[in-house]
Image (cartoon, rainbow, N blue to C red; front, side, top):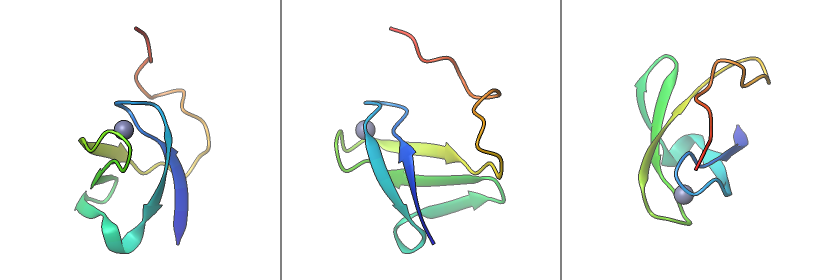
Amino acid sequence: MTKVRSCPRCFQLMWVKDDEVEVLDETTIRMTCPHCHELVRLKLVSQGSNATGPKMGH
Ligand SMILES: [Zn+2]
């Protein structure tokens, strides 16, 4: 299963591939962003909404 997520560091879109991520727990994965090369954590949410996510500001 492949998903596209926005990087929390550089906000660019990146592919999330199951075989390239580190699973921390049932809802959290970790991977290295191909753009900024930061190790970022992503929440796995079944719903498309990001209402519970952190606000992205400058
Ligand atoms: Zn990034």
